Image (cartoon, rainbow, N blue to C red):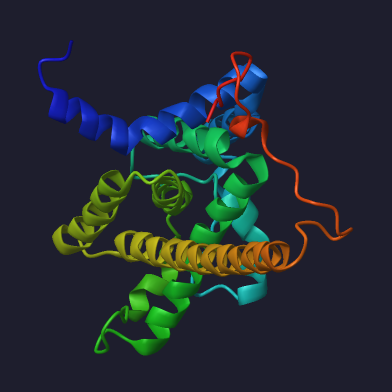
Length: 264
């Protein structure tokens, strides 16, 4: 028996749905459920090794480096590969570990295509914010200096942050999600640069999507409840069925020793 039952209950509430989803995903397909994560880790490592070579730096920049000074059409063409271009000034092992953990959890909880969609949404949100912020200028709130137009976008980190927030929201790990958001805010307060601002833009975009999903879910639930309620009223007002036959009694109301108990 746990010596800290309250702490254990809090941990189960926070991470129980997440752990259950991970177990279901691995039990259903095994390591094949992590195919996207494996590709993302391998591609990021390959890009990092390539861009550190004398012959590979320029091709990687031409194919996957996104800057705000680039034409928008060119930035959008480079965005798919930019998701896997890690920063040159940071250790690649940290980026690979983040991708392995967050992409892996997201793929098991959300599925392959939704994971990819959320990752690109977060990346694109950071890219578009950089252009808007530079157009506003540093004198305006959330504006950016013109020098940031030549800075390469964050790469995989915005996608990792966005996926972490989305998974926490979907699996009701609210405290963990709040910690991720707080860490991004602290990052900007401690070191206010383009990468930190783009992380916050990714978080904001994902939170908007989460709110829209919640709103649509409530509307769908209200419609379903209204449909069930109208059907029940029709049954009560009529003979019990559309054919006019008397309603059937549930076996739960039968008497006798052979009566079964409900599983619910």
